[in-house]
Length: 162
Image 1 (cartoon, rainbow, N blue to C red):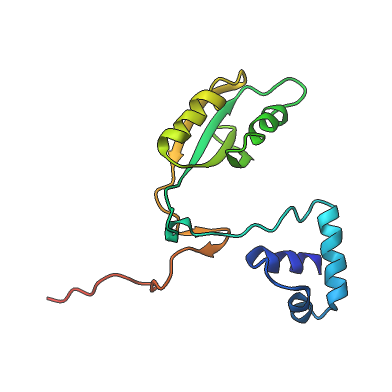
Image 2 (spheres, helix red, strand yellow):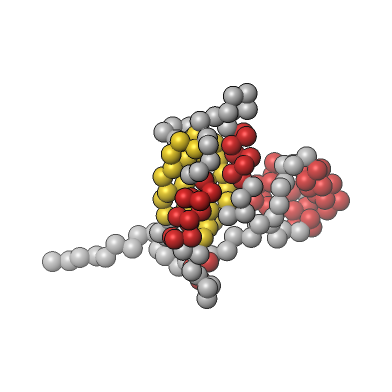
């Protein structure tokens, strides 16, 4: 049942225990107990709201994905470096990666200049950071499994007739 609760609230955290109980053939008390246990175990870490900032009046925000190549610390691997990085308030997400770089940092700033300042003054000077590569998000179509584009048909190609 816990897995089904997680699947449902990952798409809509506003579902009540009554809603979930009806969907999962359980009682609201069982749902509340399961959710409390998952919160205590650190499985449920929060209930964020997905916001399409492009539709707000103050949409002057830029999202950046920053690739980091890191020299891991002896005995602690990447964890010690990651711990220092995720404590910066600018950091929204931080992931250990496989492939051509080690960590991905996702931040949101007011401008490209603000993001560049964060990279040059906070990330790049760290002893264990070997190199950085910053990529800016130009447009978001889907986030957290939810579409940010409304009213678009599956096929928008124009019919051209001779």
